[in-house]
Length: 479
Image (tube, rainbow, N blue to C red):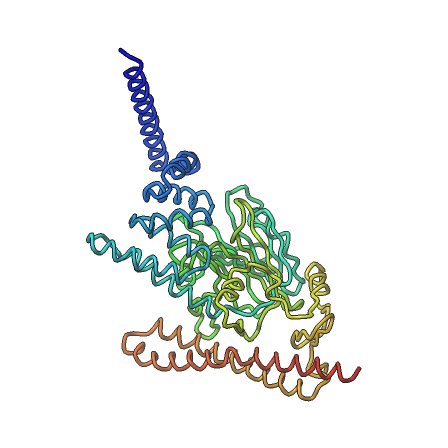
């Protein structure tokens, strides 16, 4: 055998060996992938993608591994290649990537293409049609993102988020479920107790292993008479982390049901004393809710501040507690820039929500101050932030007659919005509880009230802006 034959056999052997190793590596990676061991499969698929960067299957598998291990940027890059190569499941995963990065319109577009592929193959489309509706509804939430000022944030361990809440005594108390009931049961919940100390709200698991909301009253110095809140509040999923305003009827809580857009979402309901029923829960908008877990929203009416928790964009085991100034008018972010609205909805930076020239140092300090019952830090009707260290709390504080006129109109509109919102809540409850004929009768009234409410929502914010500018100009001219 001459040297040429030897070289050919050597080359062929190396080629066969590499092919064998390649096949073995691919098979092993696919097995890990199919077993859900994405982190373990990821390095092998990364090598394969580098060897064949245009291979649709490799890009899909590697993109899914990126997605499942929290690398959304990498997932988008490689799944997009797989979509170009018409890999069917890549459409679904890329839609999920877009959803979690607040690109809900792109998510909907991917789902529409995915549903079309499923339809051609006569496969079930219903679950993805529901996801498509969710993506479209969530995009509408971005368009209506609420203009709240988030003045501080704190990343904490998920098990220790209550350490960031310091409520005034008048707003009640919050405790960990295990600490309150002195139990070692594995219950992940909180207990809210009202200021009088005679009523508590909390959650624990039921026989179906889902969390439901409960309440108890103190009888003869002992807690008892546990009652589960009705099923129009408790959903078929977990419901948890209740908080009740000082009025005793407005309840905020978190739910994984009731149309949640991802994990826990924040909801509000109200107790109707006359009918002994609760109104249909209303889902809060963005930035409070997100495709992640959002929970434990609390309002301290004495301090004029609120807190809520979210694990959006946080590492495993961590959550972020946001401190904010409640927006009584629920006015929306005014911008024609969709990217800016998306950033505000996602809370990319809390500074995006700050009013120009404002200082929140005193309010942040107030958030960490204990206030005994009956002692109000500041007597105020509202928080009207003008600029550096200038905050007005009453109409008489406003110096400019023009600014005062604008702000009076804003107050009147806010009152009208509150009354209309209450009316809508009652109409929606009647609609939910009514028969078909009653629903048909109520439908146009509800739609008309919703249209009227939407037309009013942005007006207080515009009037406040005019009032602020007029006051600033007035103060400048008086110097």
